Amino acid sequence: MRSRNLAVPSLLFVSALLLRWLYLRQIALSPFFDFLQLDPLYYHDWATSIASGDWLGKEVYEQSPLYPYLLAIYMVLFGDDLYLLRLIQIGAGAGTCVLVFLLGT
Image 1 (tube, rainbow, N blue to C red):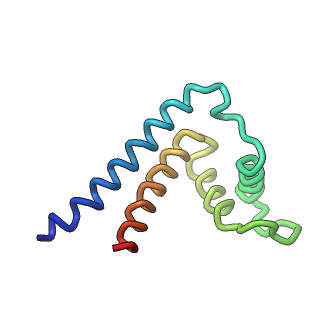
Image 2: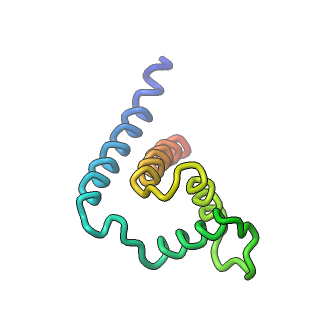
């Protein structure tokens, strides 16, 4: 009975992970893979500032600060590798699919 309850969320997680990973493989071949613009560039610059020691900043937050702080911690631990960061985000996104399924059931 317990294994049946885990079958659908597990299949959902693996499917979501696979689709995201295939997309990452395709976009990694693009010359624009490392080219950041608009919001990704804004968050990257903000996280770079935080990682370099400016934890509080000098202005009022325009956007939610959680992601830039998590990104800054990532940068301190792993450097500026966008491929690894996107792999982590793929895992989080696939986990979110399972959480939404569990909330809906």
